[in-house]
Amino acid sequence: MADDRRKEWLAGLAPGDEVILHSGSSVVLDDLRVIAKITPTGRIKVGNYNFAPDGWTHGSDLRGNAWIAPVTAGARDEIVRRKLWKQIEEQVRKQSFRILPLEDMEKALVLLTPAKSEIP
Image (cartoon, rainbow, N blue to C red; front, side):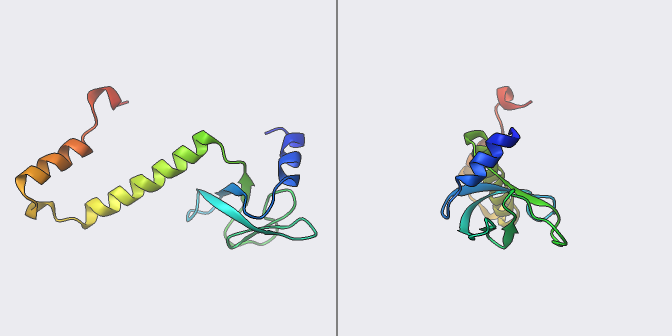
């Protein structure tokens, strides 16, 4: 995003606006978040993060560098896809597929097996 366009976007933000939170930490990589507050000095509060008016964290934030960015349809889809995949993985780990009826096991296999055209 060009510097002037980013400054314009940041200046137009308001509490309740959705942003993408990018973080350099290993805990949160990219996530959809909502702006909770913007102070009179322009500091932006998003979750547990406090961003400078330039949209970056600065100083000794132990979570690593973080910044906010506009939400695009493609980025939103990718974040939602990643979250859904994580939930699917968790459910698969929790399930004891051995006790499922044969018909349910077959349905699960069909759902979890990509079509040949979908394999990269």
